[in-house]
Image 1 (cartoon, rainbow, N blue to C red):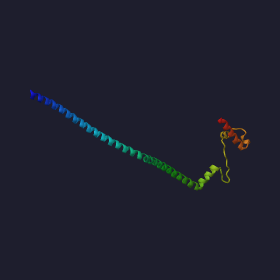
Image 2 (image 1 turned 90 degrees about the vertical axis):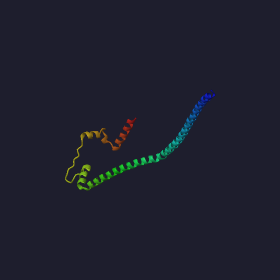
Image 3 (image 1 turned 180 degrees about the horizontal axis):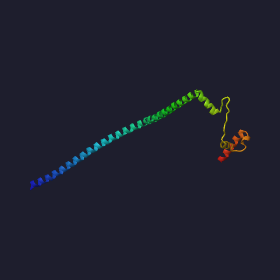
Image 4 (image 1 turned 45 degrees about the vertical axis):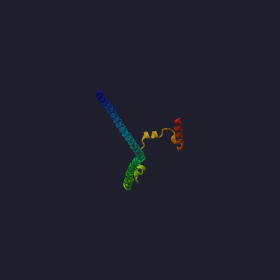
Length: 158
């Protein structure tokens, strides 16, 4: 019976030792995994720090680049408008070099007539009434009418 007890205890002992060894291996593998995780976490933190530093370092130059590109585009649009305006003015200058166009504009704008012609200016009666909204204004000097207009506009603000 002593051999049987010894085998039985040795099996129990073996199982217990086997369990302890397995537990130790699991503990060691968990410790190694945690050590690897902590190293990866440190690396990840360093990588994140480097990336954040790069983003912060490049943010201002990128903003400047974008704003300068927008300014360049705006200046190009202004230059295009100026070139179009120059072209319009060249066309206008060329038209004014033509005597027939100059004569037409002088007659239209300044109401000039050629010798022997009679010029007439037709005034719209409704426009004439609107121009003289206040009776008796034509009898007074012009500066009185201006001053009355200033007084009336000042009174309407109050």
